[in-house]
Structures are given as structure tokens and as C-alpha cells.
Length: 176
Image (cartoon, rainbow, N blue to C red; front, side, top):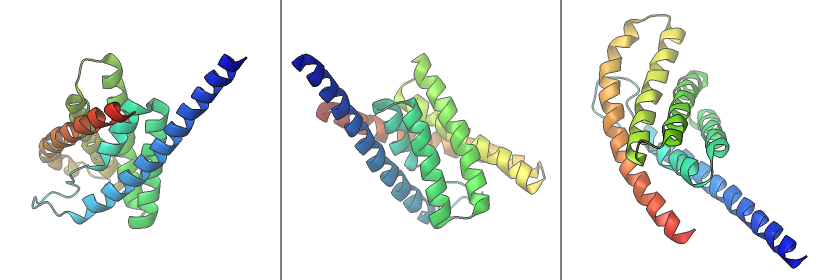
């Protein structure tokens, strides 16, 4: 009987840790999103961001799980749009964010890519999603001319975010 209680206790402890981790990383993703919006990158293309909130999203994906990463990503997008954005920014963010998380989940599952590779694919996918949203919302395909610059910046930002995330994951595995 004690082993059953211990087993349930261990399961509950893991659940509590996962909930706490998701809460902390959701908050961190929101803070990173806000900081990201304050950083002006001197490129004459709208929508270029560092994507540092992805550090938290990828961490949830690797440490907690897929469902939780999707939930944290949606929650971060919704809350930051309410607090710091508007309806248009929500649609750009949700389109990019959902395409990004789906691609990152798929690449993580096939286990051929490092955290950096998953991050790069996420950054590039996010930019593609935002371009799709812009084409639909603005009803013009002229926006597609921004895509090459966004693919390059998404790749560079994805590399940086992936390296930082790999360092975070290494630290977390030591302490989990």
C-alpha cells in the first residue's frame, strides 16, 4: 500500500512541478515578448523581432511536453496581445505562433535536429505565418517581398534563441 501512495505522491509532485514550470515560463515568455517589442532592429522591414519568447516556449516543449507548449504559446500570445497589442497584432502573432509550434513539435518528434535546428525552423515558420496573415489581412501579395529578409532574420534569431535555449535546458536538466 505504501508504494501506491508513494507512486501517486511522485505523480502529483511531477504534476505540480510541471504546472509551476508552465506558469513561470508563460510569465517569462510574456516578459520576453514585451522586451522584444521594445528592441528596435534597424532593418526597414516591419515585423523583424528577436523572438526571445521562444526560449520559454521551446523550454516547455522539451521539459514539460507538447500539449503544454501549445497551451503556453497560445496563452502568451493572447495575454501579450491584450496587454501590449491589438487585434491585428493578435492575428499576426497567433498565425505565426501556431505554425511555428507545429513545425517545432514535428521536428522535435523526428529527432533529427538539435535545439538550434528546431529553433531556426520555429523562427522561420513564425515569419512565414506572419506573412500569410499579412497577405490575408492586407489583401495584397506585395507583402511577399518582405519574405526573403524575414527568412534571413528568422534564421539568425533562431540560431541565437536555439543556443540560449540549449544552455537553459542543460541547466534545467542538472537541477530537475
